[in-house]
Image 1 (cartoon, each protein chain N blue to C red):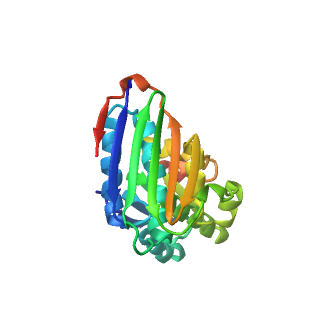
Image 2 (tube, one colour; image 1 turned 135 degrees about the vertical axis):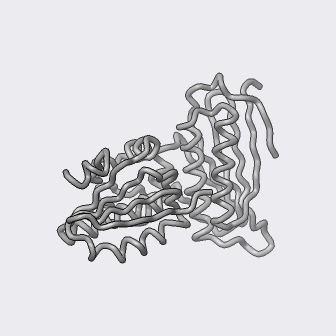
Image 3 (cartoon, each protein chain N blue to C red; image 1 turned 90 degrees about the vertical axis):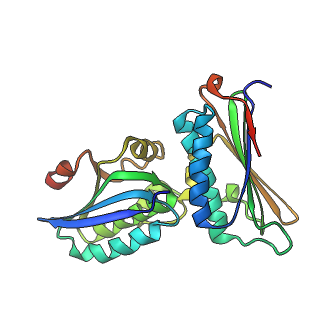
Length: 112
Length: 152
């Protein structure tokens, strides 16, 4: 079974977070804690690359929604990128796609 | 009966066990001919309900602590039935969140019921003397591929 993987690096005005594995009821609190440590370190953009994300449940989506709003309140931006097809499909089907800033690639997210 | 598929499993109220259950559940559905996207919807909705039970409900002493999951597919429909003991809580009666407001307010919780309503065609709930039963039903697009089988 896939635990949550997390790595981060700061590049220019962005903090790039790469998540993988499973973002669900068990692992969402871990991501929540890590992102809460991150938000004040972000100059402008918090980019979350989801290339290696295999699974997302409501708890994971809720965490992303929460940080989308936290960043917005701070005048910063949360951008999701590298979404696997199956994650894109479910986010689209649930009608969330227009509420997030989503870029196809990490380069697009950093430079857009 | 043609294309009759049946699975019944019991799982403990434990998120670790839920992880392995959902993976084996999805594998079982796809291996038995349920198209991948539809199978993933059954799996995600079952996951959402069970995670909610684990988080909010405790079993009633003297009742079975396990959650029984039954999946069956017949003709053009599949359904997941979750049977578990606990206090009465009808999540089908919970109001659906306004997603626009949900994003504006940055709310973390309350999406599970929305996901279930979005992905399933019908949901119903019964409670009888400490025993809860939640059924989620959905049409299956390519019924002809479904294998007959029974796992208990």
